[in-house]
Amino acid sequence: MFTSSVFESNYKGSDDVWRNTAFNTGFVTNILGGKEFKMGKKGLMGIDTKIAYAGGQPFTPFNIQASEAAGYVVFKENEAYSETNDAYLRWDFKFSYTRNGKKATQKWYIDFQNVTNRKNIYIKTLNPKTGTTDVINQIGFFPNVNYQVTF
Picture 1 (tube, rainbow, N blue to C red):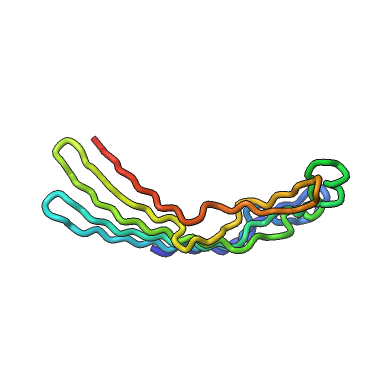
Picture 2: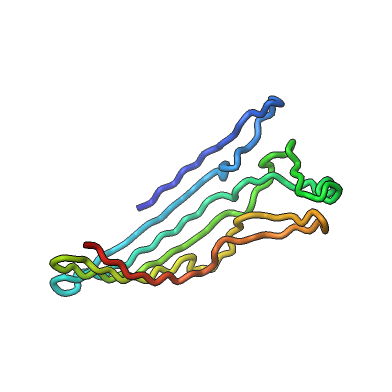
C-alpha cells in the first residue's frame, strides 16, 4: 500500500499575520507491505515492512539573549513555527509466526524499528543559563520481541 499527502497548515494570529502551524510538515508518505505464508496446518509466517517519510516539523526559534536574561526559555513568538527540523524518515521491518489452536492463538514476532538508525529530531532544547542549544532525538534502532496470546 502506498499513501501520500501534500498539504499546508497555517493560522492567522491576532496580529493578522499568517504563520505555519506545528503540523505544517508539507508532506507525508507511507509505504507498507506484507506477506503471510502457510506453515503446516495451523501456522503462518509473516513478513511486514513500513517506510514513513515526512517533511520536517516546524518549530519556534529561541530568543537566546532574552532567555539568558530571564533565566528561563523565551521564544521568538513573532517568528512562531518559522523554522523546520530535518525531514523525518523511518523504516520498520517485522517477522512473525502465528499458531492457531482450538482455544487460543499464539503469535511470536520480532519488530525491527528504525532499521536505518536514523536520528530523527524529537525536540530542540535550550539551557537559558549558558545559551547552549541541544537536540533530543527519537528512538534509534530498536528490536522489539513480543509474544501474544489471543483467547
